Image 1: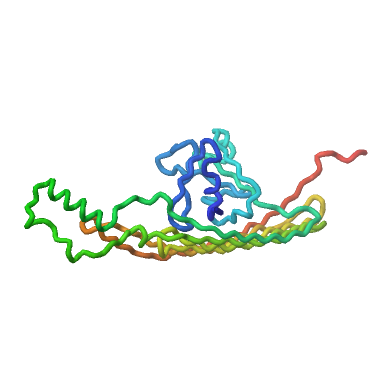
Image 2: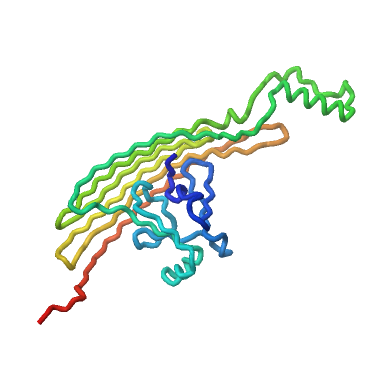
Amino acid sequence: MPATNPIASLQGKVAGLTISNVGNAGGSPVVRIRGVNSTTSASPVYVVDGLLVDNIEFLNPMDIESIDVLKDPSSIAIYGLRAANGVIAVTTKQSARGKTRVNFQSIFSMQQVRDRIKVTDAEGFIKLFQAQEVNMNVPAASRFNFTNFTANTNWQDQIFQNALMSSNNISVSNNGEKSSTYLNIGYTDQDGVLKNDSYQRYLLHLKEEIRINKSIKVGADISGYHASLILRQVQSVTLYGLLLSSRYRWMKTLFTARLFFKAHQSAIPPQA
């Protein structure tokens, strides 16, 4: 089952890292490293290719080369007090030298609620209710009349569904003598296990590096992210066993661009 958030795939795989996934489609998990260490914010800091960010929901999971979880206090010396709750360092993929590659990946999956609450049917409910009235010594004339109640609805069947998910990614990489390019485009469409929940996401990541000479490099790192979430909230009214629901739509667009300039000089002095 592919994860829409890259961190969700680390659940149960790293000691000291606690990840609590949410149930709605496209939801961001709650991440804790070594428990709660602050009364203000307990979330770790994320570092993507050396750049500090608040979260990595804009990253394509297929675009990640490696994820490192820094849990010891030495991370504070590197990234400051923001790293008091730990650091999750992410390195994205680079194009391989001297090769041109085109990769396409498409994944289809399905989610469903397996551990449903076991409930009785309408006939069994009537028998249990009437037995309770007998045990409470309710007079026969005052007992509830179920004559007009003919429904036999399992409300779990009315709100749950088999949720389909598709994830499609295409990447193109080229690394020549003077330049390197890496482009990744992704699209995710996910239904929630609650009916009428849906999540769509579009991702774009472009890396370009130009080598002017052996010592000077310039380039850009551009990321685009657009997500749309339709979420249905269900609230129960216990007096009559009714289910009330409301829906809202949430959209988010993010665009980041980083330009870089690298220059280095050989540490070996020229010979006389």
